[in-house]
Image 1: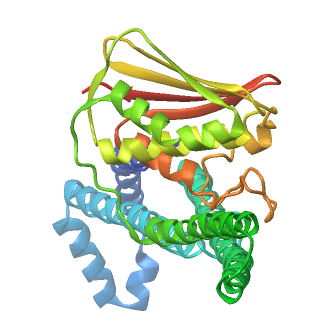
Image 2: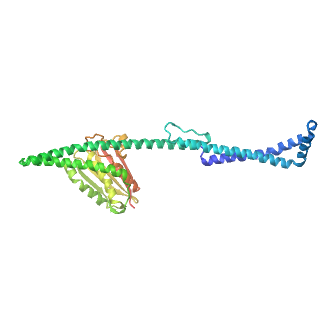
Image 3: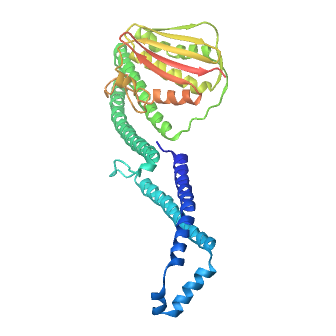
Length: 365
């Protein structure tokens, strides 16, 4: 492949080579021309016009061989320089026209002269990436719009139920205590579901408008994760699940506590939602000289590879069913990935028939 430097060197050396060839052959050709002219019989020219004859004779007498050679050499070099510049500007024009086709959907492949093969390949890579990003942006926007429509529709269900049960409670003063408690529990449960749906709508709005800015401080990672686990205790107790945390020692890192809390809250919530009934979730924390590694492991169904590769895409939901209690806005893991990467960390996921592991690696400082 010919890159920009090689293209310049090739063009320049080609020009120098032609100049050298001209420098060698022009004196020889000029000498032969002068010899031929000096020996020629121009009586025919004299017969036509004595004035023209004397003019040509004077030129041969005035301009010696060196002057003629310099003139011819200069003209030749200027012609070569003109051709080189014309070639260079033709490249510029070609590149300008090709750049217009970068976002032209009607042009599938950009073609340039062989000398510009390297630039051609680069432009085609950029074109593919641009079209891919545009397609992903459209898909993401469509997912977001669909999700908002779904959530707005789903909000009506718990809201309608809440209004219905609260209306009954309001209208019937002498309702039996047991039945009243049942209706209150149902209304409360629906209100919690309504809160979740509204929070998902706020997540979508924040993700589109909020630029994540880190406010780092010294943070006890073990203590933070233990506090997050405590917050999930009611849900874990209801589902007969438990979280075990294994750590060799307390780990302090320099990070944003609020943002990292959101990361592990999202991952742990995901692990709880998609783990088997009455199974345990394991969190392993270890560190090396530069990083701390956190593995969050849950027992559950294997995630297919094609879905595993898309887990961290925004608005992607592993369970696309609208009626699923585990199907959120599809932003939790996408936000977690952004926050981890802002900390110069890495987040990945792997899954097999027995378990799914979320692997988070963060720098200590």
